[in-house]
Image 1 (tube, helix red, strand yellow):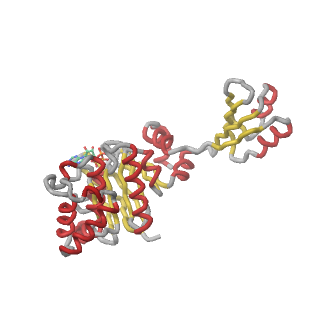
Image 2: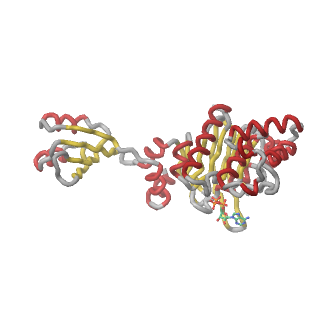
Image 3: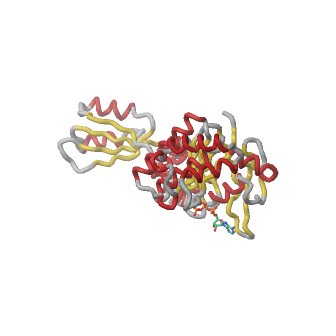
Length: 322
Ligand SMILES: Nc1ncnc2c1ncn2[C@@H]1O[C@H](COP(=O)(O)OP(=O)(O)OP(=O)(O)O)[C@@H](O)[C@H]1O
C-alpha cells in the first residue's frame, strides 16, 4: 500500500492552547478515510496543516511526498479541498463557476468547458448546468463543490462535513458518488464528519479524534476489537424455552459470564456474554434437547464505538494508554 499522507508527531498550538497533539496518521492511496470527532476536536486545523494553510508548531507532514511548508502550491494542484462553507460566485452559472476554477488551475478554455460539462453530469447536475448558483439548494451546492474539487483531477480530495444540511436521500446519493469516485479513479478521500452513520457507510477506515488526539484508528472490526478488552462476545439466542435449571447449568459453564433473558414466551430471546469459543454453550443446549432457533453474535457498530470513546471517559483513557 502506497502512503499518500503521512503525519508524524504533528502538533499545533494556538498560544497556550494545543489544538492538535502529537498526531501520527498515514493514509493510503485509494482509501476512503473518515476523520470523526466532535466540535473543536482539531480536524480542520489538521487539514489546514496538510495544505500548508497554517503553520505547524512541531512534527512532520508529507502529502504525496511533499512538505506543505515548502511545496504548498504543488500540493494544492494535486489535492482538492472542499471546506464546509464552500463559496461560489452566486450570480454566475454552475458551468461558469467550474470553468473559472479550471482556468485558475491552468486548464485551457476549450478543455475546461468540456471537463466542466462532463463533471456536472457525473455529479448529477446535468439539468442545472446553466442555472445560477444563487438559486441552488444546499445539496446541489455540495454536488457542485465536489465537481469543483474534481476539475483539477486531484489525487486526493479532502471533504470537510460534505453532507451538512442535506436531506437523507441527498446524503445517500452524495456518499455513493464519493465512494464510486474513489473506487473508479483511485482517488484518496479524507472525509471529516460528526456523522458516524454516514462515515460508517463509506469509509474503509475511521480515525476517532478527540481534543486534538487520535484515540483510535482502524476499520470498524478493529475498533470494535480494541474496545473489547475482555475478549468476550455477546450472543443472542432464541430457544424454545429456558427453564431455571437449564439457565443455571449454562451459567455454570466456565465460558459463560452472564445470561439475561427477555420476558418468557413461547420462544425466548436470551442474551449471553461469554468467551469467543461458544462450543460448550451450544453443546450444553443440544444435550438438554433445547430447541435452538437462532444464534447471532452482536458486533459493535460505529455508534457504540463512538459513544464509548467520546462519552465513556474510562474507555477512552484505557484506549489511549493501550
Ligand atoms: N485561529 C485560531 N486561533 C485560536 N484557536 C483556534 C484557531 N482555530 C482553531 N482554534 C481552536 O482549536 C480547536 C480545534 O479547532 P478545529 O476547527 O480544528 O476543530 P474541528 O474538529 O474542525 O471542529 P469543527 O467540527 O467544529 O469544525 C478549537 O478549540 C478551536 O477553538
